[in-house]
Length: 298
Image (cartoon, rainbow, N blue to C red):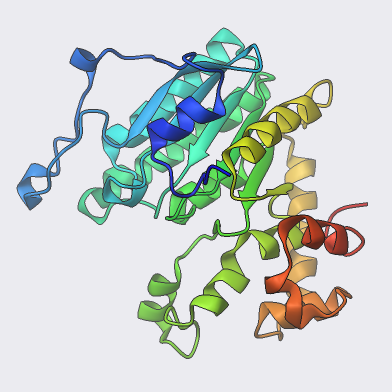
């Protein structure tokens, strides 16, 4: 088994897509590094931590971006965000078959806070424009840094979110929550709690991700194909009514689970058998056990 989590961005690009098919949209001499990092004595990277281009997935050409978690934790700055925005705008213009985002990010860079936040908003705008143009967007979340902050929102804007069990997805990271509200609210030192709360199993059970896979490159590759196929002929309209329906679902979730302090309590409330042992289940066994209890799934 080849671990998705342990791989670099370029290793993922070359393993997920057809051999030798990835083509970067920019040549090395066209790369633009962040102009903001030097003042903090932080070495820059030519692609600012994200590779963008096209590749073939089982013969089908898709547009793709892969964030490099080993560079500043995949955090988004001005240039990084502009590269993602450009990819998504190009996908909408070209009516690409699909966009596959290999997300691994701790959020926005503190060094470029305002520019990074604006960049995230532009990425979301471009992603929704691509979807409105009929281009499905699939988010793969399986890196060690997870998908937090702005990129957590970006992932949730995709048609389909694919996660592995060790992946994490959330708006605020545990350290951010603890710094704002104390460890009594959320203790980042309790790693089991962190994964119970933000990890792939919990997100899958709550319906925040549509597909759960093993931490395996081949599993992610197959899931990306299946996710794109699931969008064929069934576009989701981005309407006010759809947004209001989503808001009602979230409000109902808060009303139902607001007083529960641990994901295990939520799993029990959903009727999951032997909820205490969910973390120990293998991925496929968990998927089978969760099937009747997932939120938002008929």
